[in-house]
Image 1 (cartoon, rainbow, N blue to C red):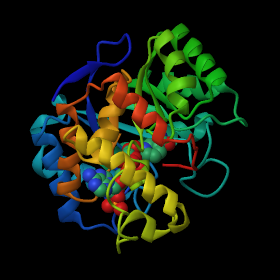
Image 2: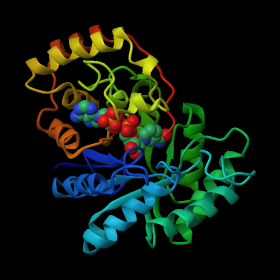
Image 3: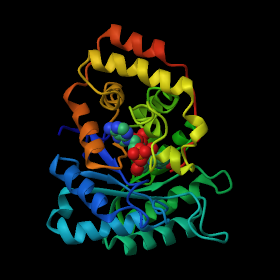
Image 4: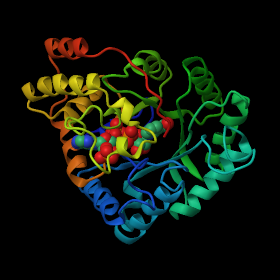
Length: 323
Ligand SMILES: NC(=O)c1ccc[n+]([C@@H]2O[C@H](COP(=O)([O-])OP(=O)(O)OC[C@H]3O[C@@H](n4cnc5c(N)ncnc54)[C@H](OP(=O)(O)O)[C@@H]3O)[C@@H](O)[C@H]2O)c1
């Protein structure tokens, strides 16, 4: 595994990080979750991306991670970067959603309890909340660091103008934003154009989520919607998103990947790494999928011709992803 510095910070992240949004909750097989975490670790994945609401049920991915860390990897805590976030709905009432100081600090405390950690390496504001002054949200992040509950802070899903305001506030408070997390993939490259340059100009790292468009940029749906797949669960990826056009696009992109000696999943991750982002957070539901994705790091250069071919197969589209 190679590691890249996150923006202008001294923190290095692996080219591929593992995300626990799906497949690590209390409703998922614990043995598979554990096997994926251990496989990632064995392959040099030092960064694990979690959030308060990951499950299902919300909160249980943090519990799964904490258990594996305690039982299998406890002696490696200082070799890992573990992140959590707060921003989307987590509990009922006015204090369990958004960007208030009350929500972020209470949620961080809850996440520490669930994981059993003493601190997070990175704590994120998961989204920009238009109903809370950005200064309040940023100061909550600063105070989480000052209280020793996190080493670094990050932002996720902030529109470009608010992204810049967040960076300015955090820099002035001497807790610079170490990383910015956005959805980015071959069929959703907009954040690479809108938000990546802002991150670069302000010294923040940039980490991409849903690099495989939740499975649409893999061979997962080439022969229909398999039982147990994300689209079959009909929550974040809906069966109607698995259109004939999406399947045909996966076939065409898969042919380009094959010419490069890669699977489509590998090429999708490699393509992001070629955009000079800090790291790519992959999801997986099996060790086989994860291993496939990790091999992306073996071929991250593209010819101009390949880039042109890939662009030619893709029309910009922006789906709803909230993780
Ligand atoms: N900040 C945010 O708002 C936000 C939002 C979303 C995600 N994230 C982070 O980003 C991480 C990744 O997001 P994501 O899970 O949407 O990523 P993704 O990598 O685009 O999708 C992962 C899904 O694709 C399928 N898949 C993965 N590898 C495959 C392979 N080699 N072959 C065939 N199918 C494969 C699996 O679907 P099946 O389950 O059907 O097998 C897997 O669950 C999350 O875990 C989370 O940490 C953050």
